[in-house]
Amino acid sequence: MKPVTVSIGVPQTPEQVYDFLDVMAHHERFTDHYLTHWRYGGPARGIGSRATVTASLGGAKTDVAIEVVEAEAPRRIVERNVSAGGRRLAHGTYTVEPLRSGGSAVSFTYAWVRAPLADRLLAPFVRGTMRRANRTVMRRLAAELDRHASATGA
Image: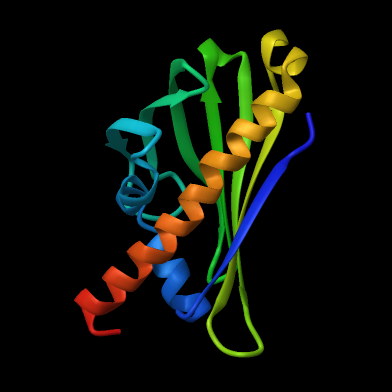
C-alpha cells in the first residue's frame, strides 16, 4: 500500500518541535480523537519509548503497539506500529524541517510494511481514512505546540 503523508507549518523551531514530539506521552494530547486508552512503557522519551493504544478508525477498533525505533534530533522520529494481531506492521515517521521564514515544517508519514487482506482490498478507503485522521492530528499538534510553548515560556 502507498504511504500517506500529511504536513503542517508551525512557528516553533525544529528543536522545540522535536523536543515535544520526543516525549511519547505528549502524543496522546493530539491523537486522542482516534487513539485512546494509552498505556506507556520503556523510557519517557527517545528510542525504546512505547505505548499501547486503542485505535478507532473507519468503524473498527484495534489495539496498536507503538515503539520509537529511530530518532535523529532535531529532524526525525520513526515509530514502529504493530496491530491486527501482528498482521499489520507500519512505520510512522515524523520529519521536522526548518522553514526559510522561521518556524518548522512538520510531516508525518504512515507507511505500511505489512497489511491484512481487508486493508489491501480497501486500500483507497483505508488510505483516505488515515489521511483525514492524520490531517486532524497535524492541526491538533500545532495547537498543542502553541500551548506547550506558552506553558514553558518558550
